[in-house]
Length: 106
Image (tube, rainbow, N blue to C red; front, side):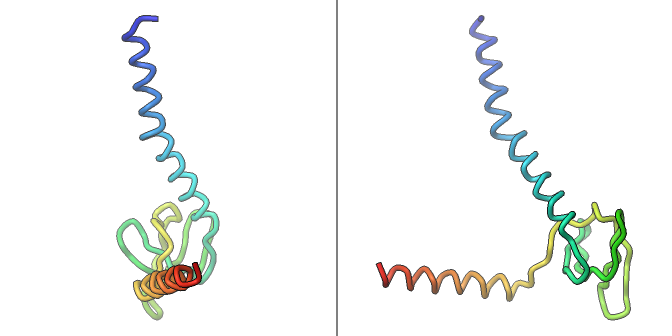
């Protein structure tokens, strides 16, 4: 094999592990998240809308964005499940306290 051919193979392998493989993993995780959605979950759409799922079909979700205000969006338009900033902060504080306790025990 010529040195240039070896270089091309090495570059492909690097691209595979640095770009292609992580993207495929994110796609699988997103598909699993979409499949696990259920009524009552709070979600964020690609457009930034936050709402609670009040109804579902195979392809669409009905989001309640405010009391008695509902919109219908495609399931694929959901970006992620929503966690309120307070809930995220509470979890990080609890993790810090647990780490401190573990340090004291050790």
